Length: 549
Image 1: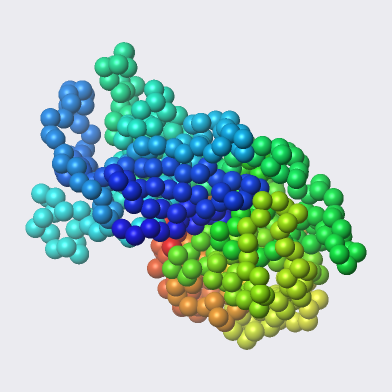
Image 2 (image 1 turned 60 degrees about the horizontal axis):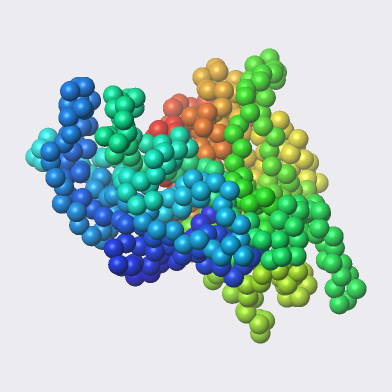
């Protein structure tokens, strides 16, 4: 297999290269001391004959009794070199880790978290590979027509070999939610020298992997102090303005009115902001707070977590099929356009900078990163601020037909203000490579108008989506699959208590109905709102498999 590049959602890239006996993962961030990824690691990835048959037998015949589980299997599996993904036969383990120079970076404060990050990044690459045949062929289905055979769950096994031989390592990874096992018993082995307490068949399914929040696992190493012009614990928003040749100060990227108007960053440059930003170089995931309750219009519901700030990016992911980064950010009332504050695809970055003689480079110091004024890009490429975007989009006849929010700019400004002060929803701008293309509203169903019309038939953490695509160039069935599945991806990972997502498009919007059904939604019923007849569409967590890649 040829070398490939894995684009992580935090904007960092890994080069994946076949080596003797496995695959090498090497970071492309080694020259960027601002937030370096661990240099690399090597994995062994094999395919075992017979593994699928064993899994199929367990699924067909149910859980084995205690005697069967205590006796080891006498069946030997043939091991083959890995060529492409299989449904149940792939096995991997980390064989070696490359550590950076101690003179440049401090060692990871938690080796287990560093290993978890490497395994997560490896799985991120693995589940971007071509999907195997999902149909299960076994003794029970071998005479069934192929299209009628049962579908299996794509999984990969994590072997207790190499780096994973550590006494408690797999147990820690299991408690972190990264790997799992079907053997949920304590086990009868007292002396671990004579048994592995059920850790021999740890695995990860694709469905479970895509419901893991990447912020739990992705972090960066802390540079040694002299490698950075600022202390590693210094918040970015506290940095002073630095003088420039024309006498103007360069504003801190944290200043609210600038919304992090930093240089457009190609996919191989580390973003300064976004959901993965951590000046402490630690994972940025925080668990949801305990439920506390209040009343809205007579409806008892949990207090909702405060959304992100205006202009803040809360989701980024590279889409290989489009060769672009998709991102979602909170809409903003700022009169200045909110510019891209996450990674761009290299193709778009080179196009944007194509008129300049000097190509983009990687710099070790924040002070050396070229600014928009250096590149002559301060006109924001003719971008509109979010109020002007809504004014433009809402007055498009195609959008006005569904939303009915036409009017002067002041009308859209009031519309956006109402969205920003809502306590159960927030307005979102979708972007491809930093270019706004759509407006969304993400809301909690229970205290929303929809909750009243379904008679409280919803969970306390169920979410809903309103959507419109404003830019003609970003329309099309594949684009819809990408952003709709990404919205679901965000909603599932933002709170594990969310088990259902709903939409209520108007009944005459047959195209959106078809798109939603292709994405896994089903039509529950029709609802007669005062202003429209709507299809109530639902998708449950266990029916969702993966985002569109």
